Image 1 (tube, rainbow, N blue to C red):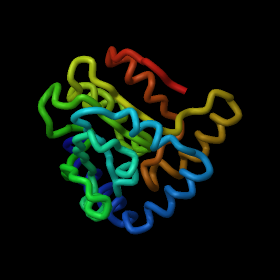
Image 2: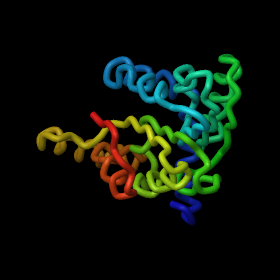
Image 3: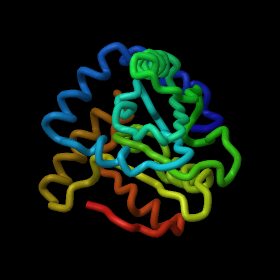
Length: 193
């Protein structure tokens, strides 16, 4: 996608358009499928933390006060909602429009990188994982939560059929396994479920 300006513009327009109702849509999934995943992930963040694809800032209430937070998103409209949320929470956050495939930070800039329920919609999840690894300091913590390819073949078959519609319409992938990319980057896996 870097270099694919028409594709970038299309996805930016898509996310800008959906920024107003994104919280409501994700609220359904958070309640019925994802449970306390956001709180679990964000409570483990420490130090200077980058949230990739921060969206509307749904994770902001779950970070500890000691976390110095920066967040990037591809959509200016999503970031506008995140800015409002941060202000309501009294939270200082460095929010920037940026691409997860080319993070605008030097190597080894962060103690923690977080990405929740976004790798499924980032065009190249392998490159996004590599970029998050690049900006982490040695010994840094990469925290991810996402839906992934099912283990059982009947569920995988259903996911593949669903992707025939979701990938071209909204860039949503159901058959990804980000853990493979994290392992390929040489990061040590401390915990996954």
